Length: 392
Image (tube, rainbow, N blue to C red):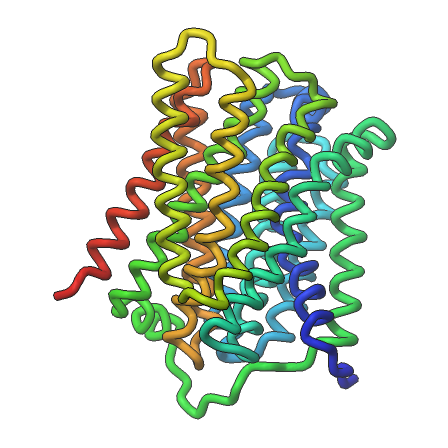
């Protein structure tokens, strides 16, 4: 069955819906973690392990999906990935033990990574340069509704149906996305007479110093963001005693900042190249990260408003980093954009898994470990990007 052509805005909207699987699968169940621990007769920390496993599985799924997409096409890769994601989600719904949850969470993540890696590749197939960065930013703007609404949806479903209902929602959402992509998105991959192996494709990307510089910038920005995502429940609900009902509002405040920054980024792309705007985003994160770390380290009783404000600036700056780093990287690889997108996404989620785990290991009941990891990530991102992109 042939797909019907879509307008650019409709295509971006549908690709945003596909990419939103990741924040939905991550953020929707955060408010339910204590209830899941009780239901599965285990500790909260054991259930939180499912988040790190999901991020690691998601990274592996992207590494597999990128070369698969460049070789076999975008549509087939999306369909296979969504099928595996749906199977993993169904397994979670039927699970009654911690081991079952962790196992099927990994299966879910592998499929999600394989499917979602195609969003950036499809955009590179149909655009380049500033147009590509602008399209990625517009897609990200639509996608940001997912992490904004996910905790609220998760909280509502938790009260109405219990934690299983959250994953039933994810399963239904996956099937809907599969149907609309099948009906509307054509194959966009340009035919390539050469058929390099997956390893050769990855080496092609890794040998490009400027591309690797952008990759470092993106993956450590992901690390800083996931350090916040992992640490925010204990900081907001534990340290500052915010109720689980109010927590989604504080979490969503960061998404509002990202939306505003995204719109500014789209406007500035008319006058500046993506690399310059990426540098601006890194500078903002560096200043706010150091300020946050200094504040929570020095002040005995930090004010919630100050902490929330600095975190909003830090996380909001992600909008200047993610789309500009991605577009700048895949611009170098017109016939291997799936592999380049996979490497960036996998590196980002793997760094996020490590930074989130580090926040948990360093956790002492205060905001300091979270702020320390967030700040360390942006420093590493800037330093490694400079090392790779400085003139030889």
